Image (cartoon, rainbow, N blue to C red; front, side, top):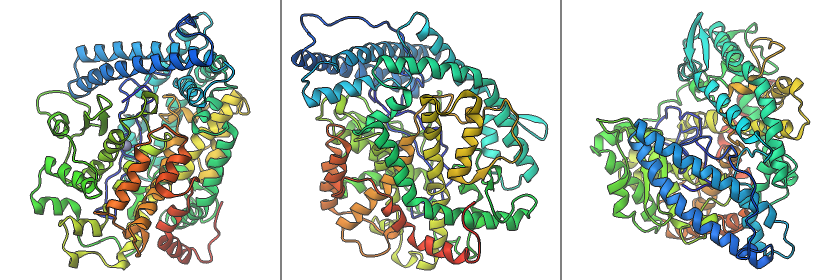
Length: 634
Ligand SMILES: [Zn+2]
């Protein structure tokens, strides 16, 4: 964990079918920060610390950055220890300690960001120093201006929005229902369309609408803060972390979306047909947009829970179940982790240090409260790496273990870098590495590690079901992953004014996802507020990038391993050349612009959706067959 660490993903992993790595919609984040607001508020005034030690010269800037990195490294180690103890032993005391160290981090990051903005103006800066100053300027998600009272007001609004979301309730059959229960009920196949519409509308209205004025005020304050740091607005600041001009980055994400959109369109058409067959024209017409509450998820962002409604006949049963294989082998939770470690060892990575096994939390302690949400930690930025899970002996957690270990190996690989470079190449990379490893749990891999007999490897006619189940999460997510920040970029740059907040949100939902609200929305609605990452102020584009990059990484590994079968069946287990190339990217951390890191592993400097398309190519062909004669699009 460091100050630029990843924010918690609020996406809930869905239950997994066995094999082909089906089912983890969006696993836990790398070294997540326990205090969600830690870096979204300002608590300090600008101060002029340019002194004789750190003059406003290129050399002074370099020396100042050096000092900051040393200070932040020390802080991050102290903070990580406290957060670890807090997450694995929740008491009022450890909560207080975590809040205290979080506040200290906020003050530091705000002070350093403001100073960095000044040093960034010095002419003739060394390019590397300039890049680090940008990283420091960019460290706060929601910056407050230094005007009197602004930091306090911004903090109050952000805290209020967050807590409103946490306490939010919807309605089911006239009774109140809390956030996590309503989320689960949206995926309950026994619910009627009327019940789904009731839950959808009540959640959006109750949670979102009261936030609207505060949200608009928060946007205005934070934009002033971004301007003080030298950005035109907060959205431009968020887009500035990608080693390219902010506008180019926006165009880049749109280009990636256009690449993969044909696959999404085919999936959308097929699922719409199935929903039309189930519900009839009055509920879901055979053409046009899909009713947003029928897709098994409050935000229509992952559709895995309605897979039984769309499953191809006979392709659901693949003949084995990883949960059963784990039971048959008789392996326990720690041994499941050892199996994951073996994957990386087979690629030539060093074994995990003994401290990993001594200090990780693998199972839920019987006698105290802990955070079970899976995460990967890097305590000392050297090799005190750990995972924190409450492992269950099932297929889903077997996949999550591989995912979390991906984070740990990334963290250890870049541990020689400067403090500000102890991170993924961009914020999509870390999750993508974990997911690439999770994609690799194929039947072939299970055979190689002696968990599955070769004669039980499912035949090719089962692949469509497996790929469709996978696509219901990973492909369905893509347009949503993009539009959340498209909306915020517009809100922050003023092209979406408060009066059109809600209409613009649904215009984007319709344009990108092809979904429509089940009922007319009231004039005062603020439906974006009903998605955690909006009141929680968590940037979202990273999840879109990770969904693209994981397939690109996976294909690169399979190509290097000389895999010749269908991409989705590939295993590169045991291939040390792949390990060497992968390590070349991982060990760079964030020390170079991300295209350099991408090139080190994949040989290309461009992100591309073509690997995702190749992975799902058999499904695309099958979908097009099913969709014959149907109108595609909405
Ligand atoms: Zn993760």
